[in-house]
Length: 473
Image (cartoon, rainbow, N blue to C red):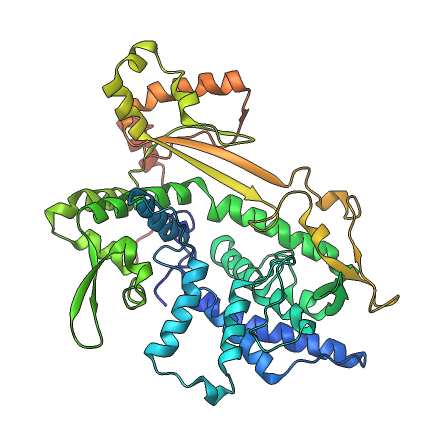
């Protein structure tokens, strides 16, 4: 209930403060609604689906619990944990999806939940966890979920690894658009659900859509790219995430830990980056930790506290430059453009390297594991007037050119410096590197830090120009 769905996007869109609790309720509702609608669609054509009430409960439960594993500030905490692990020499990467499964088991055990009251046995609970994790088309069908291969399509509802169209994205695309843009986007989710049907393709049952909603699905992919461009990977969002990540690393170095009370009443302290290994500690780790650090008085936590205060006051790291790139370059290529006398001073170069913060906004039209091209080609379509059993793919060029992008991915490199001292020097080096590599200039090329840009006299003039409000009387 206390985890913001959008992390630090509220620094750009102040209305984006809704929580993952709201989103999870929405996904659970949409998951069961979609499955019931698909069952109804088949019943209308006398081709009933073999779906039980227990299946519907399991799909809804997967939707409700799919984001349990997210930590404070959502995806930023995942980066923090993995960065801290690398500092400890741990190569295994931690992912919040795995934590969702661990927390699912922990919450059932810790709360002594008798799931048999809801008609759920061990195989059903295993099925819920599998639905949360999703199933790639190339993966073998699991044998521990108590269900036949004909129910493979159920994996396409909550976490669709086939083409990325699932109720998770449908909910947060709509919810985030309303919170940030102020209106419901032109993507008709009820129409998509009404036009969905289960058809066997390539030996697997999967959710297919009527041909007439192809443009609506294209709009869904377009909305995904728009949200990533303007909200999720907005330069200020990514910059604040990086500054808070730095603050958490400083807090960890200062000995900050989570106090946990065991069932027997004993207390223990768990380092912040290791709470993901202790479910009792992880369940109480939420966005409140940022307020706790801001309110701390410990001298050891002063560096972390000061950095978080800078974020609160929007005193951000300084933007050196930005451009579009095909691949993210090694920062040494840019540092090579520094003046020779600076590069000769090893101490100075070490300080400059430590100050450089490269951030990349990788915008994709499809899901995170999408390989390129138009993602709608991974969706199967059917025409009910011709056949309810035969499917086709949308070929390149079949979607109206008015709504088809020229490119389906974009990578923008932002380079920041933690210290204003090096800003001009690095800006010149970055410009020289851009000219040499012919990197494309991208908008906006502005500094993210607040700067005085008007003289005191002009500031006074602009204030006088604002009309005064009439007196109440």
